[in-house]
Image 1 (tube, helix red, strand yellow):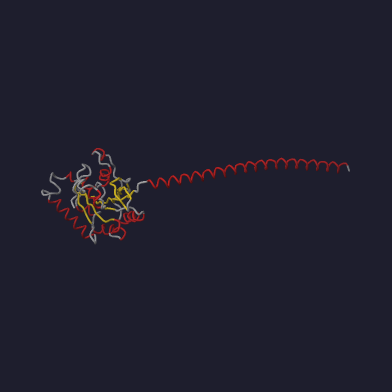
Image 2: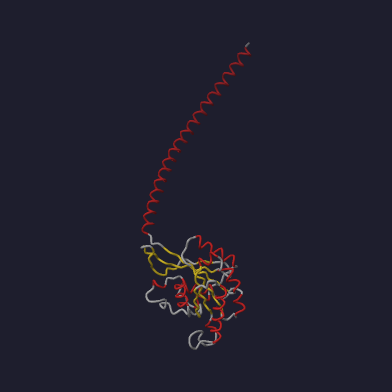
Length: 289
């Protein structure tokens, strides 16, 4: 009997200990729940504050968008053989103050590269003042498929007009240049439906004339070889494009800067922006067309 009573007393003691533990645990849980409720209220408050701040930022963005100047970005796709001077000419066109020493330090690249937009001129579209700018894309001797993808992307982005700027290395000979400026490649690259719609003009820059004998590349006393070269390329473009695109021909040197202003004038004319300049594109020189 005494043993049974002792066992019951121990059981009661154990139950009381368990009850005390449960009460303590219940208090801990209540404390945690209180902390969670407080944290949740803080989160709701913070979330509401962030939503109000975001709405304020959006209102500011809308107001800034109303004040922003519309930007129309046109594109120049630079094509031609590797080592023909595309990178140097791109630097000349986007940085007119570059010196020959600066240009000599430029490393050519096989990767496709796009410059930041370069402002050209102001114009009006539907009564709004628009800033016309141009970016240059070095397609790095890409395949017709790669170039086609870039032209397609330009079209999907609903950008402005586009011009193909073909760099012809006069020191390399016709055969080497023909790997990039040939009837087959021109057709495959620029005669696709989207390319015909996007690229309306061709500018050919005959580069490195500063390395030729001291004979003018154009004009009344032009080197007969240069006249023949221009006729060759002109005939090539006639055969490659149907209908024929507007084309401009400029002889010069990206390194020395000769003909670079004329090249930019031809680009402006090819983008149909020359009417926005005072006088004619002769502000850049007289591009030989």
